[in-house]
Length: 336
Image (cartoon, rainbow, N blue to C red; front, side, top):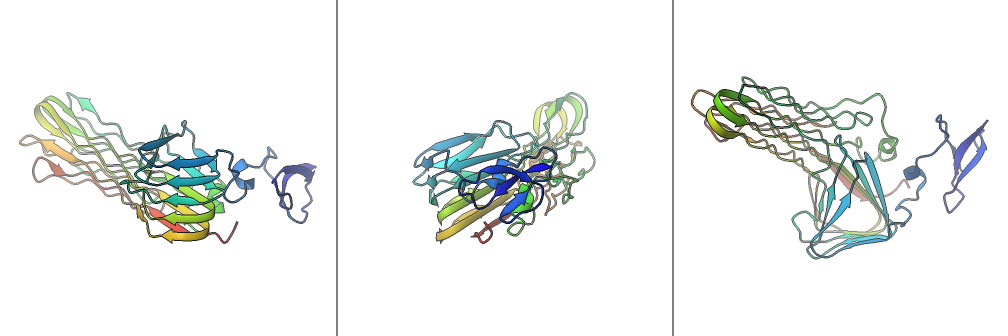
């Protein structure tokens, strides 16, 4: 029986079909399809096929196309001046983004977020607008084929709801998780916060939307790392409740969970930058007399729990629970 193997003596990392018997300098692939996922047999720092990423001013955007995993292979990465990198169109359950660089990675931009990974985790619960009392919506769980990240529960009229707990290992997960296990506890995404409830006596109210969880951002550089800027994997903030008309209350949304940032380098110039990995802040509750209402809970991830919502002492108080804290690691590549 033949199977696909990676010949590690081949400088071009070309897949070869050989017998299933293990041989020196080769890795047998035992899955049913007989194929090796492309990220695994790419060299550390990638192939460079996407050319150089250079941002000196303004925003540059990577379209994630709704995919669960997106890999970019750059020859080098340079985000300097006032430039910054954003991402759009993630999967609704979050996206893992890998930025590989054959050469140097320079992130010295003075922008507030030189790289913004706050917006490609899983979605928060949708806000509700209604003329009758209703509970909120549960946030979206992050990719269940990785490691479960528990979303913030639906906001309640008379209680804080269930906060996103520390996630549990799912029954299956991407091999990408094991590749970086020495450097990160797990490769995870942030779950979304729950949306607030509404309590209506008369009129119309809109609850606060749940904050979006942050994504997982992994950077490999086969060259030098020069990092003095700011990279954010913070969770998105929950929205505020809105009184449209009448008497009642609208609960604030829970904050989204923070995500993961992992960067491995072969050589180092500077590592004095800032990684922001806080959970999203819960939203505010607004109400008229007699209709105080809890905020919604925040989303969790695989290492941290979200926070439950609280009741307001007065209208306009922050009541939505914050999202869970994330994780970051920057260090020397010793494995690949």
